[in-house]
Image (cartoon, rainbow, N blue to C red; front, side, top):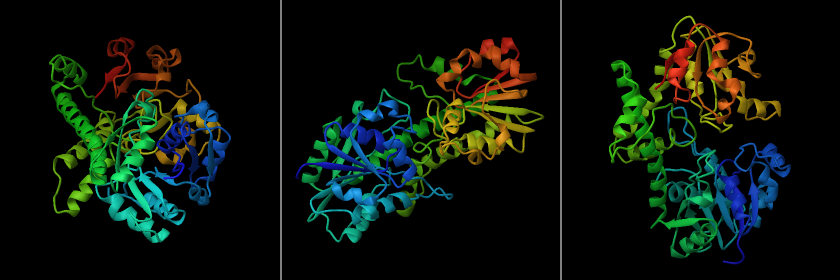
Amino acid sequence: MSETKICVVGLGYVGLPLACLLSKKYQVFGFDISEKKINDLKNGFDETGEIGKDLKNYQIEYSNSPAIISQANFIIIAVPTPVDENKDPDLTLVENASKLAGRNLSRGSIVVYESTVFPGCSEEICLPILEKESGLKLGIDFKLGYSPERVNPGDKEHAIDKIFKIVSGSDTEALAEIAEVYGSITQVHKAPNIKVAEAAKVIENIQRDLNIALMNELALIFDRLGLNTKDVIEAAGTKWNFHKYQPGLVGGHCIGVDPYYLTYKAQQLGYEPKVILAGRGVNEYMAEFVAGKLAGNKRVLIMGLTFKENVPDIRNSKAKDLISQLKPRVIEIFGYDPLLNELKNEGRAIFNNLLFGLPEKNIISSWPPSEKFQAIIVFSPHDIFKEEKYSLANLIKICGGNPVLFDIKGFYDKTEAEKLGFKYLTL
């Protein structure tokens, strides 16, 4: 392979950090279909917050013109792979990215997929698109690879250059070249083939989803027993081989989505998954459970609306499901998230009130709010909530009657909350 020139297709939470790291070693181009995102990146603004102000330190040529892909001979596709309303894989974005890559593919190039897919997708779905659009043939004119993303938004400790990266290729030569590129920025594990790498990715998140589902089911049982789940886990955790996991509402782009990719493929092959789908069912129920605990004549405030703490991203946030479950059960719902307010004030499209189905007036933009609440749900416990203005002593001031504090992840101290007059609930 001649001098390696890389184009990363898709510049979100996965593609942008990868492009930045690779730009330290190679000439890198960045492509995204969003003109707004490209303009932001050219101006040094990273709306994901993963790179932040350091963005200006990386030499990357950005464009929303697909022609920029043709300047590279190592193409990395890192676009979202969600599920549709039926929980089936939605491959629209990865198929469209494959079309653009194919139309701009030159002989001798390598195409590597990072997007989470079911085993077989890269070779059975994406490869035919690449060949059709380019008129080239795998193994003769270009090579194929798969290296699943392992990005955990907001987690600097497990950034790309601090973890193992699985790499795979369509042949031994492809594997060697792909391993060399990724090996220049992090440690790599060479999978024997592309399907193994695809399967490894989905089971990483299936395992975590099932572990959380077990904790959620235990929380449902302990609730009926009048036990605090956290206390039980702490006690059980004193055994050497007990693994601690916490209950919670599972949202985001990975853990609550990836299981459906494998179950879809299993069903195509005539097997009906049992444990995986049962775990999904438990996790999907938790928003209804939380809402049921707050039913009554209440005005409810939800603190933190993003899909996880310390990440300014509301896509696939279970706050949306929680609000849907609360609507028929309470008088009025308000939402507050300082991370999203910052983006909203800058006019960033990532903030969209309609996603939550709340009117503009019910999205609180300044703290403390003027309204009084009978219940507060701490949904995404951002670190910023450790500031004094969000202390329990100040939270009680915006409440009336006998307020409920549903602290989903146990962010606040139960004893202190109860001393101040809250009815304290947690999973």
